Length: 352
View 1 (cartoon, one colour):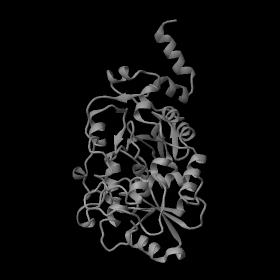
View 2: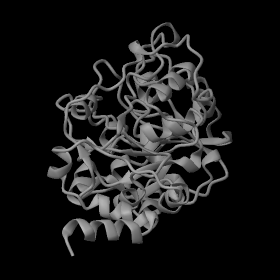
View 3: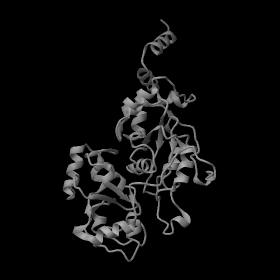
View 4: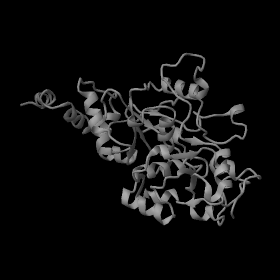
């Protein structure tokens, strides 16, 4: 039997999931030299639902769901270090074939609505909806957020998508980087491309995507109330920064920022929640619970947990880890301004 006949026989006799596996077996080099293609089968919805379940999904599960109608991959890479830029890396390639890029700095609240100039604050819903339309994302799509090698900050993109109204059951975070996707023969695009920009979006047009005002976020006044109430507060604050910054033993990365922490807050460094060998992956639930216990945090507390960090990014890592420990996500929120707001305001109390 010829090679072509074998391929046709395989395509006709296997299930949609098997076809996905066959497609993902192509080499990265082959994909780079040919136009990317996406498949469509009548069973794609059920295939996606069976492959993508829960917040955290493996690279293998993502490979199985790749190409299904209604499954969209989003590069959510962001880096604190100045020598790496998620947008530039995405635009230069490689990237998962057909993936888009969500820029948490660009699709955010700016200008008069953000008088303190805080970074990557949750966006207004009209901007978010316009961005989703530009990315060809509908409310019915399953969204898989991924990051490039070593990117430990993709949880913020995940929480932005979910917090702005996307169905929680349809937002997933890939455990493993783009590098692992490539190593496992996932399809990629290598040609340069352009990511969307907020400046190019028409906010006056009626959006197809139905966004909501940001949820699961709190402001400084809420946190001040918790700090002032001390032991009588109905919430606790968990700080995701490293121990040295929490204790004011290391300087803040932002110039002029005070060091220390909020009175009564607990310290659970976000890095302790991630796989030390691959920070694009979370530790397992047993290890996560141990990390919270080490930081003095009871994951099952009836009190609301407010997650804070340097600027609202790694606080999302803590929030996700709490959920992986079985905590009800409605009892966990993120302080959007975090230490970028608290530490720069001379009127807020700190322990240093």
